[in-house]
Image (cartoon, helix red, strand yellow):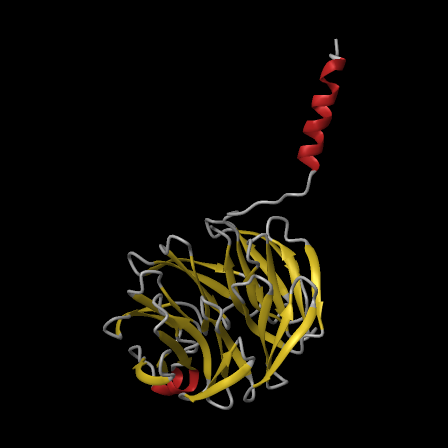
Length: 326
């Protein structure tokens, strides 16, 4: 016989099961596919669990401060799409963002600093209100954006002008333009904040800027065996949390370089797919994911052994990678 006194309990279970999923540390990996206008989702083992249509030409991505949502730059729709991490449901849009390419989130968790490729500018939008906040002139074709952990400075790379623009957040001014090598693309800060590494795609180097003096103090040249220098086109780069090792995606050279940060010396070149340009490390830093833009796949690297353990086909022209594992 049915126990009617259990009915309230059963109703509560039903409500809990049917509530929207809200979770952190899902282990999911998100890849923006620029040409197919899709996002591919992998699980922690690297298996594709789904691919869904998104806005036109998705490129840069970033988690919200609480990591419950993630933002996608939609270059051909001139907006930022906002998705819930756990369900991948579209939960919002920030409109009127001209040709967004990449962006970074200020430590206040509220302001996105965005490179606007066709407008030669960097704009700031408030993600809570969706409103425009500020705009800074840059050189042509801005791409990389990097905010310092204290939120006081923002660096923006201008590909066509060969400049790194330094924005002072408090005064809301560009305080310096640093001339770097040809076609700067992306940034990485050392954990102590003293060095800013800048990939220079058409110079085959990474320039190193002293963040105190805002001057270039060194550079690292890349040349895997069998490639000419003009075939080596570094794009994305990462530095580990302990500051000992850097990874640099070498674009059309189809390799990832492993660099000793202190000695500024290349330790290894790892062969990956065609045109490696996007990188992401798992939180434990034992696995590196590489987006290969011309082979439409992701290379997964064991960072202890420095070998590719597998390659995973995704959609057309994978660009950015996010990993939800902390």
